[in-house]
Image 1: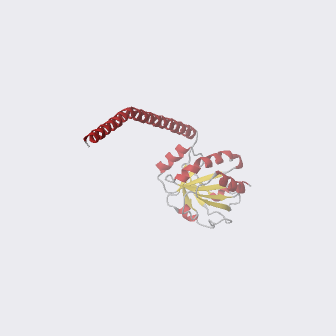
Image 2: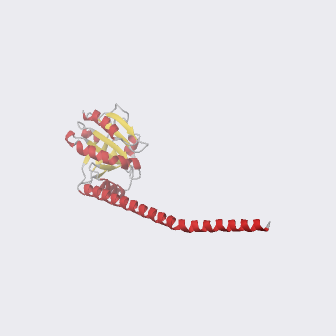
Image 3: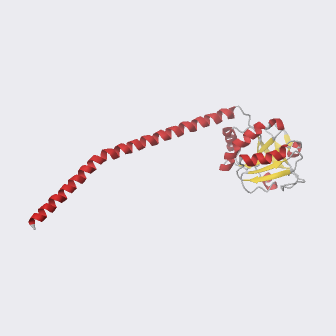
Length: 220
């Protein structure tokens, strides 16, 4: 019995020693793998940071070439319904230089009225596509009016400058224009043809294919 106990003790001691040796040998590998993982993560972060700064610089460079017009808006009492197939409710754009222009003055030109806000992620996502569409169809006399939903003017100015917006932006400070068009969700886009008739209403992110589809109807 004593011999068996001694053998068992030696065997247990040997196994314990092997475990300790294995633990010691694996520790450097574990540390090396950990360092390699951290290094890889830092490289990825650096690449993302460079990409972000490059994109921000590109946007800023584009924005610096644009003249951003931020106006005020007010509803004009009278006829008009926000429903498709009806004349668009009239409203007035009051520009910083004192000029007044009504939506009804734009008859003969296709118009997109885009309701948005600085805090709205889908509004931010669709803005570059709207800017590009505006630039591409200036020869077609396309008008895009961005109607901001009651944001402070400073926030609006920073947003449109950062995004490189080149079409007029008006601030619906009282919410009257949004109520006239029964806008309850952002973003919302209203397509108005050359006769001043609403041809389509789109609620939510304006995907390129949807924008192109409804644009074709008002360019005719």
